[in-house]
Length: 55
Image 1 (tube, rainbow, N blue to C red):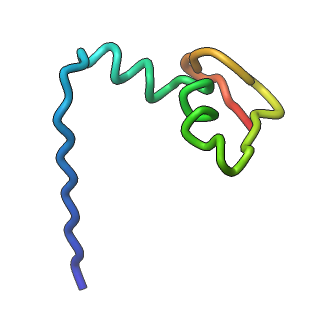
Image 2: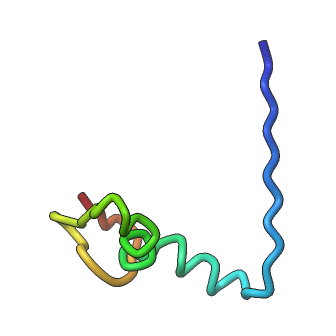
């Protein structure tokens, strides 16, 4: 069985700003504030770069 899903998001942000938000540990933590998620290893704040990890 093949399943297809498409999600379209409209935004006024530039591609660079969207990319930076996608690799931002701080943005992710803010979006998960209700669950009290925390970064505990690797890069724990700021932007992730190539090859970096967060736990």
